[in-house]
Length: 357
Ligand code: KG4
Ligand code: ZN
Image 1 (cartoon, rainbow, N blue to C red):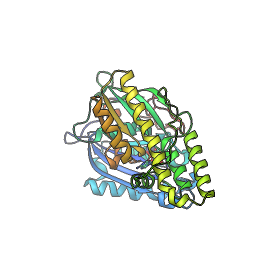
Image 2: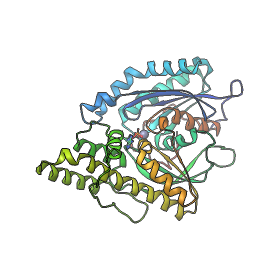
Image 3: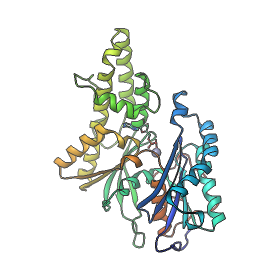
Image 4: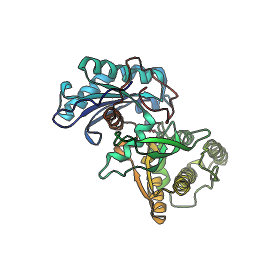
């Protein structure tokens, strides 16, 4: 459903973003899609570490208990009241249905109560909006590498149509055929005794190692698609061997270093291959794995060698957050897109399907 762009207050439009697609309950206030006034994330990661992963029903219940305090805190930190909001945006997919429903319905009801426009946001689009929250954001077109716990994909990211300033558009170039990179981190981390979510701690363990890493074959070296499930199986086999030899403790960080090298080299090579293929010299990287220090170093170095400018999501906006949702929501609203009240949660939403309809 299309409507004219919402009116601005005092020259600026403040959008409240809501994110509840997985295990982070998040709310943020962003001005004009760029300036983050507040960003509150209440993570359930510690709660779910005892389960080894997210239990969907419990995630939904936790979101329901947390959403109102998180929203209130985001307004308090932004120094505003509900009446200052010019629009509300909430993630409506992809993600866990029961989790998505909490933020989506809270957002729809709040917007209706305030009489401001509401728009549903695609979580994947929001992850690729996050790198643009820094200073001097790069202008599209660029290649977008999305690396999270649920997704690993490459996109050609272009500008919106005339009259849709700042609205990114996406064309899929390649994606994982099986596991996402973050999922592989979490599974291999578990083998090494690291609690869920394991990415950041595995990254640290890998970086603390300076000897000869366990060698793992780079998965699917050709093309722009990814595959991490074979690498995860190879790591599991090696861990079992080392355990049998009584050497797992001694070689734990060597496994982490070898696994990390295989993942980050694959991600870096394919992202640069995508730039070469569609002749673009700009790359942005978003999603939880964009926080990986090994990836940030390697990709920055290799991109510089090829004259490619790379922009990572700022660390605070790499993992799930609502600032990226508010930013994407702002550009949708500014382009005149609002969502109907009957918009449903969409667990398997793809990028390219658009947002909010
Ligand atoms: O984007 P995100 O918060 O949620 C999804 O949309 O999936 O990503 C979470 C994923 C988890 O799998 C987590 O282990 C991984 O990102 N992650 C990392 C790092 N920090 C978080 N993976 C590798 N290195 C990191 N430093
Ligand atoms: Zn995410």
